Image 1: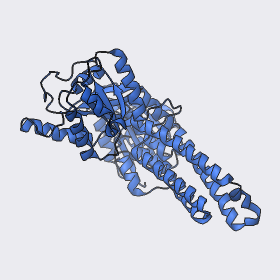
Image 2 (image 1 turned 30 degrees about the vertical axis):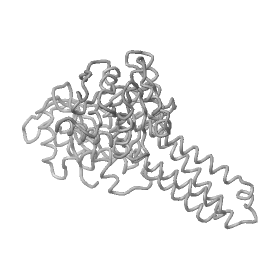
Image 3 (image 1 turned 135 degrees about the horizontal axis):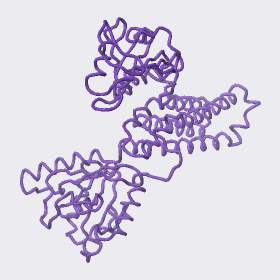
Image 4 (image 1 turned 180 degrees about the vertical axis):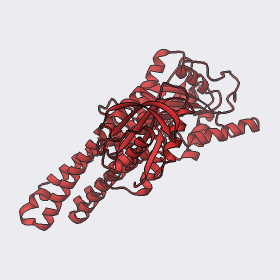
Length: 455
């Protein structure tokens, strides 16, 4: 971080104001070079012309933020001039022509804020999540992380895991004084409580991740099972062509909806069958399978009036592609019509009876309300207070932490306190990778590469 960096911090295009930000040891020198100000007072706004070598580049307000009381923790200067595609670029070009000042890399300002201790890693990632938030719920969750609530909950859990490990190791070093902690069952009770606390943190993080990237729902099933009709009903508009001709949907069609405050993308796919009518339908089926592999939840639609063989073929094809361990909701369509008795018998068979099931009719508003509730349950969308923005790496680290606590429980049951303490240490280290207490350059590179350059 020896270099001084500069970038445009506002979006390009027409607008009232554009901000060009400079951070580093030469920030103050850049201010003097372009405005002539020698010793500005921190956090005071000065109106000046921005010029270099006698050429006026723009005019506007400059503000100096003295380290460490700045966004990055370094000396920072903001040149607030006219927006547009040209004026901010002229100021930036002049700044990067000064010795020792270069263009910032994506996310480098926020990366420096993290490295300088201005924020933890969850707050740094929340900056990008707030910028890219696609709903009010997502913005609130990002602000919660930015304010440190995610990190606080993780730090509290880490402290409890550390204290538990210390007490467990004391049983090893001073058994005559601390044997009661293990022998009385108190250790197992506390470890169970820690496991439940970790599961709650994971539930909140999982919902935060859904707020960030949205849930991916995929409609699957035999041709003419009612998939396109349901898509139109959930979207509130005629997005898909609906006819009685099997195989009408030849390609994937996605629309944006909202489920319990969570943005979601629901995708209609070509009907699954082993004997496509032509090459175009065959391509559509291959694309449908590709969408199934990316789904958070598969909605298998079965027409209650149809031949039962169509339902069996669809379920078998889905399991063949995704395996039996999948998040699948069975929707029995056309509940307003008389059912085929053979289909009802099939639905009572173990392979279908084991699935979450909902009978629906797109012509009934009550059916859609029940479907929304079922979707929230299937996706794990719960009314949890204090949801914060989260990412897939956070979910993986929390899962790894929980796995470590589970292994610690197993070791505690066998009486091996040494391995139990080791598993607790591993669990705490996984939590540390979320907040940045345990990190690596590779992790930081991946995280900040997704940021815009000016942030």
